[in-house]
Every structure is written in C-alpha cells, then in structure tokens.
Length: 370
Image 1 (cartoon, rainbow, N blue to C red):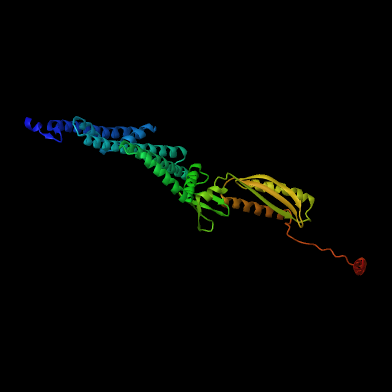
Image 2 (image 1 turned 30 degrees about the horizontal axis):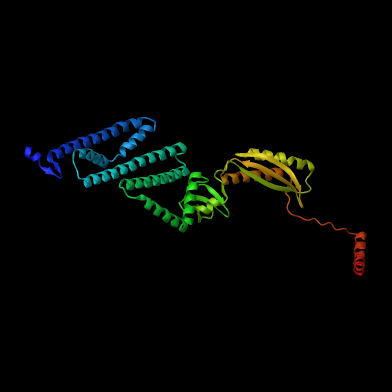
C-alpha cells in the first residue's frame, strides 16, 4: 500500500493526488449542499416577505452555477499539487475565465432584478415602461459583456491596446457607413427612455396619423384610421412635431351657428343661457362661454366654447351630437330659425324707377364724351 502511494503521476505522488481528491470532494459537496439548503430555506422566507432584498439574494444563489462550484473546488484542491509553469499558467487562465463567466451570470441576475423592480415601481401594465426596461437591460448587458471580454483578454495577457485601436477605427468606418441605421437606433433609445408616446397611443406626425402598434429599433409602426399600416423611421418621427392624443386630459370644442335677421332682440339675448343649460346637462362636459359674435352676411352669428372631459373621440362626438340635437329642439320650441346663405333683392316700382332707367343712358353717353 505504501508503494502505491509513492507512485509519481504528472510530477506528484499518488498520496498528493489522493489528498487533493479528498479536498475536492469535501469542498464540492459542501458547497453544493449549502447552495441547495440556502435556496430551499431562503426561497420559503422570500415567498412570505414583501421585501426585495431576500429575492435578490435568492436570485444570486440560483445563478451560481454548479459548474463554477465544481471548478472552484478543483482549483482549491489543486493547490496541494505541484505543476509545471506551463500547466500552472493554463490552470490560472482557465479558472480566471470561469470566474468571469460566473461574474456575468451574477451581473445578469442583478440586471434582471433591477429591471423587475423598475417595472413594478413604475407600472406593471405600462407598455412604455416594459419597453424602457428592455432597452436599459440591453444597454447594461452590452456594457457588462464588453467589460468582461476586455478583462478576460487582459487576464490572458493579450495586448488589447492594438485591438481596441483597431475596433475604434473600424467602429468609425461602420458608423459613417450606417449612420442612418445608427440614427434610427439612438432615436429608438430616446423614444423608449423619454417616452413621448407608447404602444396604443394615437398620434399625429405631419400628415400621418394612427395608433402605435410597435416601436422597433429602426422603425415605428402605426395603424391608420383607414386600416393600412404606416411605417416611419424613428429618426424622422423623433425630429418631427408629434401630437399625442392619448395624453389629452380634456378636449376644447368650438362650434358656431347663426340665426336669421328677423329674430327679435329678446330671443337673441335668451340664446346664450339656453346653450349654457344644454352643455351643462350633457355628462363629461364643462361649459366655457357662448356669445353673440358677429353680424354675418346672412345671419346673426353665435360662438360656443366648451370642454369635453376625456380623450375618447367617439365619446366626444356623442356629446357634441347630444348638444346640437337639444339646441335644435330648444330653438324650435322658442320659434328661433337657423340661418342659411340667402340674398334678398328689393325692387322699386313706379315712376321714380322709370325716371332712373331713362336717365341712365344720358349719364353713360355723357361719361363717354367726357
């Protein structure tokens, strides 16, 4: 038995290999059992509490890979062995890469936790909030992955200065070649983070209008009122003036009407109170004013202003219809006639008219001679 333990394998006696193996088994099973115990115990505690800290701890433990525990135990156990400089260097590089890989997993868990907390704090059913969270997660993960890649290369003693310089020059060339695409990409990030509009909003941009169906990295898709899909570049949409009707709290409505010139002054004075009473009787409206505004060409003109308290256009039109129908009934009941474009011609008959007709040619002839 003593002779077997003295056998040399890869520069180490079997006794040293046995010792390292026992250390590896003891450490690996201890870490694995501890991970399982903590997940089970803390998971039950986290389910009963309302705090987020225990959820974060459970997420970090769950993201700890058994492969990492295995290689960590192997790395600790290998300290009892002697390796050649080349083998020791390879062991260090391998373990460093595994550590960085596990760090990425922990970073992903932290990022996911932050995104969930942000979404829950803002509004869990808000499409714009979910879009913002996804965009932020993408950007943060891109930064983390880039930093880890640089650290891994540096740990492996790769000269990254020339690589970064080359990537910078290549990045400038790519940016110049794809500046329109990159412009739309950054515009999408601005839209998602600033949230001027979100999925489901009805917007008007220039001559285009529709309901937003999707906000992509390059384009935004709208469903128009006539049914077709409108695809707009994010950069164009962000640089234009956008009207978002979903954000509307109330709608200012102005309408005019005219009555005939044979309407008496008492009836004219009664019209503004009638309109005020009608508007106030319709739900979700706030009366502002009604005035006798103008002596029109063929009518006495009134202007009415009120506010509809809501963004829904169909409900606004229902209220407008109710107001106009009731106004028609009230005017009909008070014998007030609505005006329409008319022209009245008064013709003088008799001797005076004949004299004017006979005198006209003389004036024309006199004007020609003069």
